[in-house]
Image 1 (cartoon, rainbow, N blue to C red):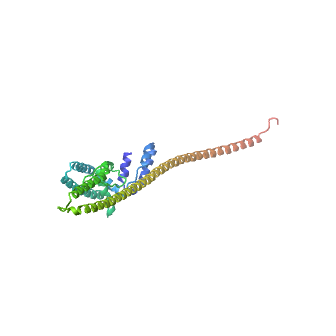
Image 2 (cartoon, rainbow, N blue to C red):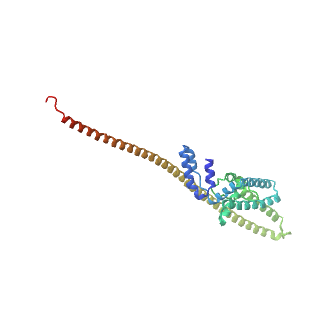
Image 3 (tube, rainbow, N blue to C red):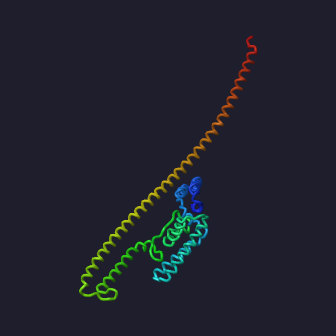
Length: 312
């Protein structure tokens, strides 16, 4: 199984389907039906995934360099070391650019489309944050491009990314509270407001804040709905893709069974043909012996007819 995966994900994607079928058939002929099914279920990599897989084979240490940089980024973020984060962020950009070029060179891609380069770079960036992407990259078995949508300099894991909206909301709350404290002191550009206009301006500020808060609430609600719709659409697309892959794997299994049955029937036909040929030879031999027997009988009768009867 490991050898089959290494061969399939290391070959050109255009050869993937035919070679997968051949390897699954070989496993079935060897009597390993489980391996045949698992090989038939292997997913064909996208062009970008194949390019990144080529990097893993050409430079096995690329994954280690990404993992080391990711660990440094997380450590600097936990320590809140802004200077170190900026240095590592610049290093991250340089490393991703270098590995992207190395991957495209290893894959032998000429006239690289901008979209392909972007997908390769995004996948390498995602490997910094996602352990599954990093593991597939190290093994050279990526099946599709990946993206990371986090915040900040470092690359937090999924739990940290999920907490990012709460952190932003807390920051907005802190800024709003600071502004209210300032307004309560009656300060505008370092000067105290006149007492007679304070009440009116306070009311105007309250209305303005209410309008702004309502606008921000509507915008946040719209963004939340859009995010939910995008997540649902992505889930539907992922489900459709996975269903299609399962259908392909099932069809491949059925095809393998059909090929095996065809081979068995061909052997039976050849056996029947051999038996028919042998039976025809035996029939011809029997007919020859029958004709010879008839000839001998006829000659014996003729000889008997020439002999005088005993009573004469």
